[in-house]
Length: 308
Image (tube, rainbow, N blue to C red; front, side, top):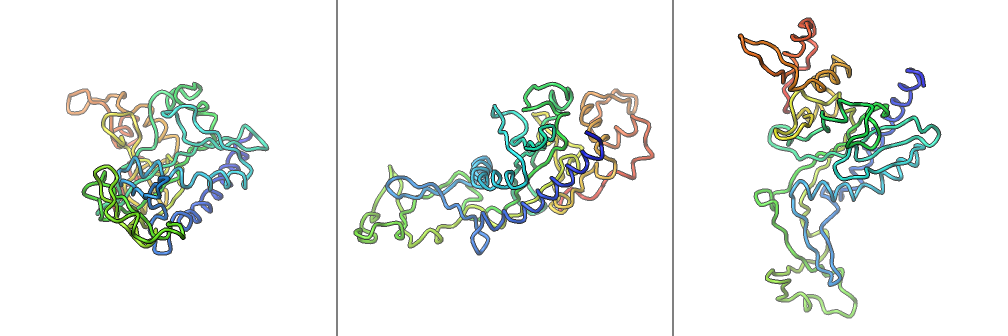
């Protein structure tokens, strides 16, 4: 496959992904912007609200939009392969039905708004599979077999009901779910599940959603990356924390290019330079460019504040 053909596949895929994200907000939201998912229901018609814990919200959001992702892939002529193991990269592998050499990695990422920007999220490892790009360790296919690596991101606002206590949940009995022969409120009156009270409400819409105000975006990973790790205890690439920069794919490497992104993160924390007479591991982009003798590229580092 020629370089020109690869770029054509990438451009077409990104355009389709962008169009897809514009439809997702309406799919997951009510008319006023609340999440349409209210909780889990059991056979007794009890509704258990969802915790706003980020891991729980993230997983349920993935389940919620997954049917749409499958439909999207089919419409653009791709099939999807899921990772064989939970900690493998990426979440989704898109493979062209007409040419199986055409593969794209797509990770689903969710994060919530804060007063300044968003809560941080990671863009995948800069460890084994990122460095050894022809190997298949912790990755569905070798890294260099993918034409592009993308993030399908979801930004949301947590509602105030349990922001301070994200593991709190409530139990509801909904009148509109009662059978015709049931007398409203009689089954739910003074009811408990275990030691917990059951609250009666008129309809599902009256249950407050734990999250609201969705903002979906699609971005190529290297274009929204920062030069900092996303977490201190794992080898993960961090992202920009600016919502505008995520939407516009304007991370610190945006003007430098993907090759500098690759080289920086392959060498992150292992390349060493002498600063003020001491050997120092390189953990920022400015030092790395100096180490490479390219201080002339300092002005290409996107220095916009990483928070909105």
